[in-house]
Length: 553
Image 1 (cartoon, rainbow, N blue to C red):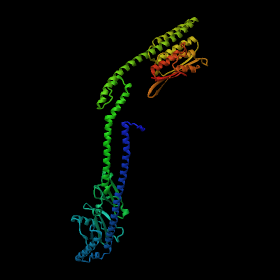
Image 2 (cartoon, helix red, strand yellow; image 1 turned 120 degrees about the vertical axis):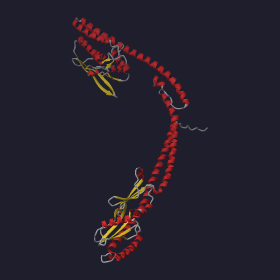
Image 3 (cartoon, one colour; image 1 turned 45 degrees about the vertical axis):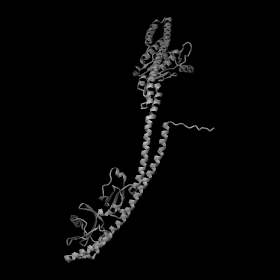
Image 4 (tube, rainbow, N blue to C red; image 1 turned 30 degrees about the vertical axis):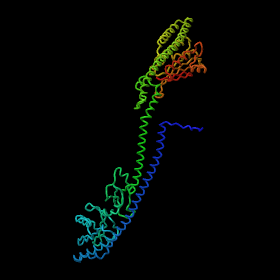
């Protein structure tokens, strides 16, 4: 016979939770791989742009150096320009201009036709284009004006460099040298300078910006990406100082560039998987809300049946779903709970009446105890013939008895209890003919606090009967202290004496609620502890070494 393996059972919630937890590592791994792929594609694209720019910078640096050298040599050493002299005629000037254009045309074969050359002779006020014009006549006149204004008479070509200017709204780079009243200048439009980079894939919103060496922008192919696009586009800097160019390149390049389609395809696969996960998660969540959650609510409300009231049972819903079977059970349980709650209320009222009866019984047990003590004291005084003392004793006793007869309430003001204890001490001092040092230190605001009647006097009476002070006189003190515990206000009442205190076995019996003797000795203290428990439940503390009662105000 085969041994059947016992399979572990899981709740539906546990199965769904395990499914979701198992999907999380897969999503995390996919995100890590996608992130790594994104960073690698971004790195490769940046590297491709940097390589293209490096090739461009190297080529452009060679062209600019060649043009600068050509301008320098021509203006200083070329014999063609010697023809521009005050001793020569216009025909010689015209022939020299043609020869200069041929020389420039040969130069343009190696450097490119985008460079324009102009010659200016200030003595003869002659300005001419030394290359084919690629600008309008209006722009030509603006260039002529700019060259004439910038003409500087110096000897040699040292100190000259490429500069930037804007002529007729178009940014240019130009290299200008003046020597022996002859000025030769090369102009190239910034647009033509960056034209080789236009073939580089920078993205739809890619941008190339030119800045002079003072970090001032003088040309850009488009507006730099803003907002969200500024985070998607890389900003690459190529300083002119490192490349030997008279300007700095700032390029806004698409992070993915030529590799974007590969990453987009990969990202679409990820989104598809994520969408399927979300759909499955939504289906699981809907199943949980429509089926599993109503069952959980049903089970949870069943567990609360013992703690709900009759009013709450009327609005109790074991489920708020559209599951017909659970709604039928809901209606049946509401009727059942109503009946159960009604029975619970009847039982609670019966127990409450029983507790009130027990409290009244305990109070009545205390009163005869006080009666006997007072009558015995008065009888002793009359037997000794001390009539005046007996009269005073009767006055104190009448006040004392009057309070006893009014002590049928559950609670009385603390001030009444203190006055009752003081009347008792006056009686005892007359009976014993001994001084009792009595002090009371309670804040006046606490005199209105309600406490159970005949509580303080029970302990004061036991002090008088059983305390045996080591000193000459008996000392009794009653103090009160306010404090806050767990956000609630409490009053601590302490009754102290200088006697020997309760024996440990007596304290143990009182704490256990046991009567100390069969003849009723110390029955008042035992009844006080029981009354405190009935009236305050567990919201009080007592310490019988120096009697202390702590209860909520």
